Image (cartoon, rainbow, N blue to C red; front, side, top):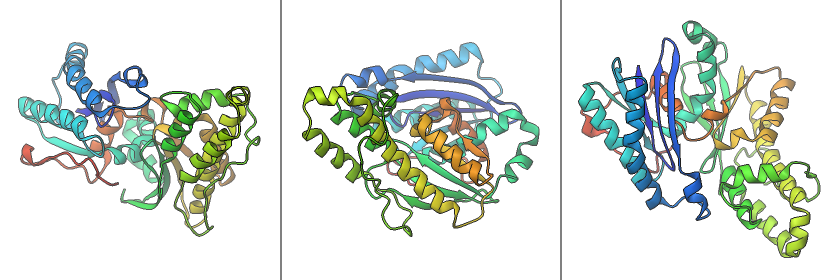
Length: 342
């Protein structure tokens, strides 16, 4: 049994994972309502809330499941906000020391990489290794507020990054677009909601795809294009055309993600396509990549909605499946790495 803690940004989360049966419990405290008042995450407030809520969350875990049988403690040690990571790592070290079990530091991005396989494991834990091997090599897209990248996962479960973003991440572009439109925080889900019923072809926003040989993403020009478009419109016009604006802006993000993913698929033979990260919950994106996978007769492994954002379930799972996740000895050797790369 693995107990995992996630506190990289504004979600305080704990999960219990048993390799023999899957996730036996997930607990989370969201700070969305708090940071929504400020239009985005305030690092000092996020750190304070982790400090305030991690203890009570652990009490819930102990009350509902107990701590007996835990064989290791896993924790996100990067990337993320320094103060937030520090709270989680300190708590994990204390737990590992008290329970006399190993401590495993997990890369948050690698948690996203493996999150689409959680549902596969839950379906038949005993046969998981064989079924996963049949899906490798795998091409995955991680798309979130802070990261947008394509990676490959080979049969040895080695991760190779094949492209990333040159500037803004896709989720960041959606959040900034939402702010320009006056929609609030969190921006991505609000843009998606307001896009319903809108015409995605109403405005011709740039896709930022660059040369066909270039797999890297770029979304900064998209945000600038939206700002220029809004400067031409009155507040009343913006509100009247809000659905079209959101649908067109969202479609530009989705098109860029799909085009680069399609290009990457053509360069190598893969057995599956993956989608993970906070923006992976966008239904337009999921449908578009589902179409790409179907055309190529590949299974689309999309992370379950509850495992797209920051969550401890994927941290526990990665601590078990990721070859790079090894116990820290001594416990003091595990440190936070806010800028940790995949």
